[in-house]
Image (tube, rainbow, N blue to C red; front, side, top):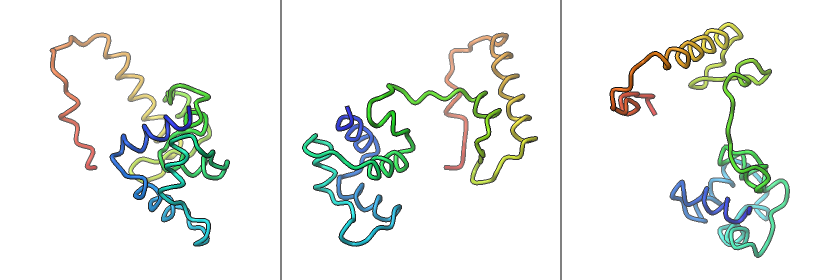
Length: 135
């Protein structure tokens, strides 16, 4: 499962093996003789070799997925936002930390949206394209 997930994540970002190796080496500074290489990652994708725990953790961090997802232990990366807002994890929005008051107000906004959604009529349009997140 790991080889397929790794390849899918990499190709989903439209990056080559060499680009992934370079990105990992920039993101996680290591000694020159321990840097990631395209052939090393290719061997992982083909199932010829298995990465160490440290390498799997680096890949999970780079792709913003859990190690459980990457290794095939779980099939999806679903997150219940309500648990995220009431949990102890520090949350950021556009690199700005959210205070406990911010978290509560955002939770209330989302809760109101979800409950109000039941009352709205579907007009047949996909309004997602109108949202500009400045990315």
